[in-house]
Image (tube, rainbow, N blue to C red; front, side, top):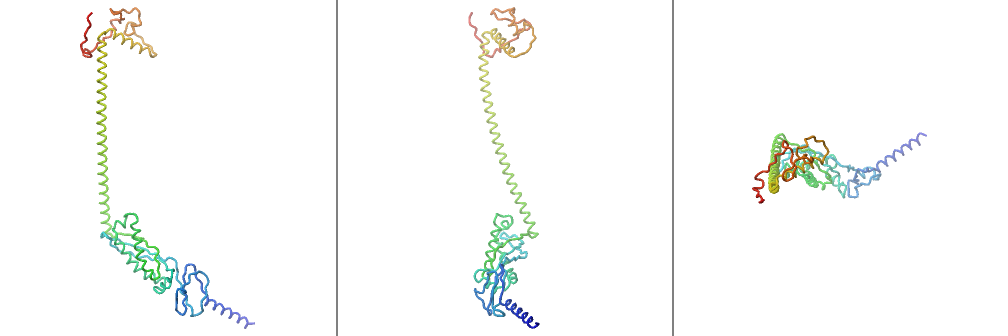
Length: 325
């Protein structure tokens, strides 16, 4: 019984060993190069995930590469801008193995592994950062929108040359922009001067606008004052003219003019409700007393104590010619 069991175990181990040496798996994030007798071609590239077969032992050799994005970050680098300023820059590169065509074979020949590629790519990536020297300091730090993005795109274009080695650069980004201490002081002073210049320009512009508004307001006010004065003079002249005519008419018959004034005043008093206590012989209430004495013209006259002192300005209508009696 022991021998058949040993034989079965041995056969199981042999089959397992054969399966292990004749099969391999490919993950969804891997590319595999299957070399036969150390020879490879485009047919040696396997990208289809799943279980695959190969010849055992030393006939077929398998090399795997991860096709996911790899991150390579540069150390801090000092870059001189186009206007002579200094910047300390740190950038990053996202890359992956080029799976198109014979890209995996080229990558294997150029680098051999992901780790070796990260080491060798760093030098070229640092050299490509010299593109930043084509830009002014203000363009990279707080410059027009998109300037830094264009600089990153140019660095990515520089890195595209490594595609000949089976590497596909995907993204380049500037993660840090720092200023050396001396540059920081100079930049702050220049920013302060720029801010003061802009503030002075805005202040001058505001003062000019205020003066313009004040000048327009003064002009408008003078025009309105002149118009109002001219209108008031016209109204005053018209009133004086009518007053002269009225006084001239009154001087022709002063007693009758006074009588009309008493009648108007009496009508105005009795147009509203109220109580008035006055002697019956005071003007103009003497008109309501039938016993009030009249003058030669038949006009009722108040008592002497309450007779109004009405006078007509002598110059109101000039001399009045009396008609011959």
